[in-house]
Image (cartoon, rainbow, N blue to C red):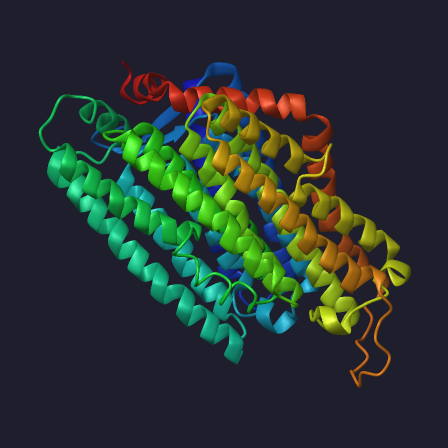
Length: 504
């Protein structure tokens, strides 16, 4: 059994790594890259699903790379939170991969798209499974480099402009993250998260310095998560690449930053929780409001979705700010739901753009009559994002609201409810402009080349796949709530993590 657990922990890293290497060997043979990628993604789905089952059955699992004992070696740790993240990432990765077959121009596929997508999957798995803060930085750099190249893939002027903004601010974030890691190592002499969790609980005179180190992490991971006031790079860059790239980056990557914030500020940076949780409460409120107001002002399908990424991050930080088991469970549910829904909405926008030749809401219309299935798929995703019962967004927001009322944090709850109404307004605007109203007839626009049946099938298939996942977590919410509540209990009871890593 230990050997099986060791294999399961490294498979989410090895599979995308080998997938990237094999795709590089098939550089000009795109069809072969698609075959390799399909096998890798199917295996990754299976491996992450089994890993979740094993962690659910046996508790937190860990392995030491090279058999160096903790805290000296490189540690990989899987608890329920990290397992749910890598499983959801593999689900959305598979959907985006299928969409890319016909949703991405062949010229871009020839530039190394599939190896880069596998490297992005590798970075996500590494960031979620790592057990030390320096390797967390390393995996974020893998994400940063992969995202930068993917955003520039094709070399159009808007892409290059967006990529420059993206990489500049994220390099700054990486520098701040590395500075914070250096301060922590200087104060403690350790980088292992479990050992750091023990050290910070000892009486010490350098709590103010440790709090300062925590601020480095809040700013750096706040930039990567796109929280207020550090979000400005996201809406300037996420709408510029092709939808296949925007969907995966927009749906998932900012949530990895939130994952890191939750992991570090439930396990390590607990020296002055009153101040930090107040700061998180303020950040979450402003992030929700600014993001949704930005979305309401846009008339480009992709820009609306980009601003909603910011707004929804606010809900995730809100659960961390309330800091109860129920609120953390609500945050985890919200992250899983949002990854699926946001990825799906980006893919739907891509299908709309492909069928109509534009993402501008003002020139779109009549898609309800022309493409009723697509309209139905959009409604499910949009209502889930807005939190309409009984869809997944409702259950996540209900858990957060209940936790807030129990904790007496009424202001942030009222803000979150108001933002939900504005989110519904934004989704209604897309529905009215894209699907319901009549398409303008006085605009001299080129008629888009309609895709053939095979292309339509490959564009619709990942959307339907993700809708199925969204409906599953909506109508089987009791099962998911049980999982995320156990995940939140593991976050709250840090001894479980410490004992599993250090064999105590």
